[in-house]
Length: 223
Image 1 (cartoon, rainbow, N blue to C red):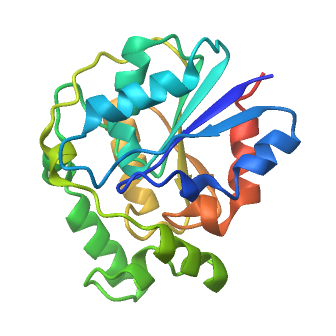
Image 2 (cartoon, rainbow, N blue to C red):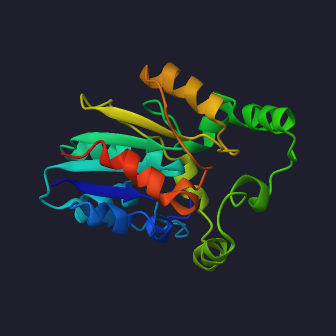
């Protein structure tokens, strides 16, 4: 049995994973969705990492899964504990010492987002409906609105200091992600990790729009 430890994106809502957790548990594994105080102006990456470490406790067979901005917390956790496998899910993949605030310009993510919008015929100006909710069921989208928190600035300015762990690292990419387009994620995964992405159905919030398919992909990393 593995323990899947699931990290949220900006805002820190563990609720993001609520459709995936029961699917992992039904398959015989433990699943822990960690909640980050994303709207706390005094929190930030170290607090997120400590929360994750506390949630893991003495567990050994841990698959750490990071969604979006959770990618800046996951490597810090790997510095503190022995993790069996690390999974980036539509995530910001950092370089050692990088800040989340600098990541956007360093990776040219905005240019990639706009180029994909022009190529596929949807609006280039960012809005939640177009970039996050386009494939999320309406009832689930309402729940997201109820749970949403804004990420405080502090985490964007804190350097993510780490060395890549010598463990299996996977990059799971939503085929229809409009915020971090699949082609963009593939480039960053290759440049920063030397990895090829593994495509799953869904957009940026794949755990809400296609939980079964994402869970099936994650289960492939379990023991």
